[in-house]
Structures are given as structure tokens and as C-alpha cells.
Amino acid sequence: MAARAMWKGQLRLSLVSIPVELYSATKTGARISFRQIHEPTGKPIRYEKVVDGHGPVDADEIVKGFEYDKGNYVLLDPDEIEAVKLETRKTLELVQFVGSCEISPLYYDKPYYVVPTDELAEDAYRVVRDALRKSEKVGLGQLAMRGHEYLCAIRPCGDGLLLETLHYADEIRKADPLFSEISGAGADEELLEVATALIDRKTAKFDPKVFKDHYADALRDLIDSKTKSKTSKRIDTGDDDKPAKGGDNVVDLMSALKKSLETSDGKKKAAAAKPSASRSTKTETKAAAKPKAAPRKKSA
Image (cartoon, rainbow, N blue to C red; front, side, top):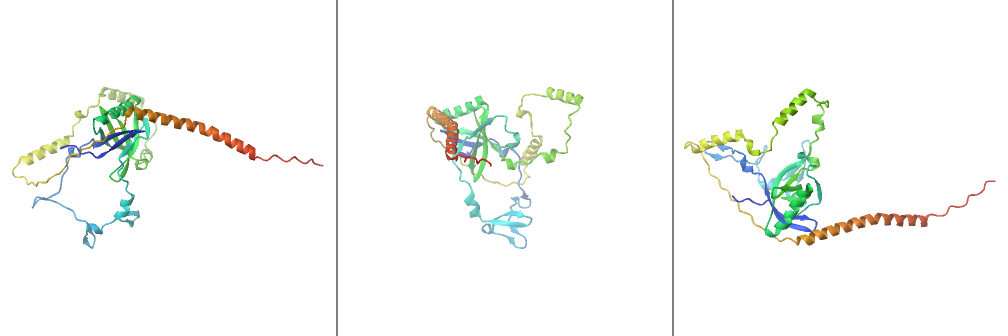
């Protein structure tokens, strides 16, 4: 099955815009999942939306409610929620860069591959990739997708770029209440030496293929034996996935990069000159406005 692009748009670095597509870097189908089946009929279980004392309800009778106090809800109409949703912007602008090790793993959420849409986009794409790698930096920006705004980090990944969505600061639970009971005293030196030696002995290059999900393997063996059995009950379901396509053009890379640097330098020079001129003007104004002190009267 062809991979489906999650988002299509422009990756922008100052005046350079690169048409790209995002693809999920993880496979949800790799994990085994189950459906509940009604054994007598062999059909999947479906769920109805019901209200206590009333029974099943129609979809057009349902609104969303936010529990602002125990048992108390403020109701929001679907149109009201839709009105505040962000439109999916077609530009992801890299607005800041940080050291590749500055972001705690705690903030990383979901990875996506960033792919140029065509050959014309590849030149600028490779420049951004190699510049990030050479500077050992990660690019930060925000992406509006499917009605939500995501904080994103972009870093080199092999021959391409990897985008990782990040948690916002208010989504991270504080560790202090959980770690507060742990003593701050250092470990016993002899035990520490043994543990360090053990770590050194077991240190090796990371290879994810070494690790296997033994539970999933056992489940697959069980499922395989059940599918080969003629006595097993079965149901058939269908899936319709359409492949994605795309492609825009890219601006002249060298001129755009040079123009970006000139614009940046011009802003820095203007910012550096502005405060001194402002201070000089304020000083002159104060000097002109300050009244002369009246002569003191001599005491008798």
C-alpha cells in the first residue's frame, strides 16, 4: 500500500520556500489489535450512544460539554468549536534554531518524514539538511494541521529530514512531586564502581533489530494457527486507501539565501543604531525642557 501524505505545503527558511510532504514515520499496523466479535453470529460489536433513562440518541442531538466544576458542564455548539479551529496553513516556517541536544526527550511526541515533492525542490532541501547537520542545530516552528497547532522540531535524518511534534510546556507533568521522596545522597562508591563496569561491559551501538516483541510474536503464531484452522469463525472487512500525489516549484535558492542574509544584517544594524539615537534625542529634549533653577534667597 502506498504511503499517504499527512500534510503538504512549504518548509520555509527566511525567503526560501521548499515544497514538501509529511509522512508518518511509525506504523500503527505493526502492533496487533483486536475487535470484539459476537460469537454466535461472528459479527463485530458496535456501540450506540445512549443517555441514562432515555436510551439511544441521534448524532444531531449531541453537543460537546466541558466540565468546569464537578458535575457542572458548559455546553459548546459544534459550530462554535469549528469557528476557533485553525485552518491548515500551507507553510511551516523555521523561526528558531537550538542545539541538537538542548531539547529534553520528554518533549518529543510523534515523528514524521519530511520529503521534497519533486526534483526542483531537492536542491534547497539538501542545503537545509546539510546546514542543520553542519551546525548541529534543530529547527523549530509551528504547524497547523487537522484543526490543531503543533510545535515542531526538524533535524537531519539519514539522507532526509525528520520532523518531530513536541509537547507544549503546559502538557508536561512536573517531576518534583514524584521525585521529592527520593534521597539526594550519592550512591555508595563501591556499588557505583561495579554498576559502571557492568554498563561499560554491556555498551554497544544501538541496533533496534536486536530487540524483539516476544508477546507480539507469540500472538502472531496463535493467529496464524487459527487462520489455518477450518473451524475458526471469520469475517471480512474492506479498506479504501488512495495514494497521494503533489508538487510545486521552488524559488531561486542562492539569491533567496543571500537576500535573507542582507535583510537580517540590515535589521541588526537598524536595531543597533536606533537605541543610541533615541537616547541622544531624549537627552536633548530633557536638557531643553529642564527649567533653570531660581536663585536662592539669602537668609537674613
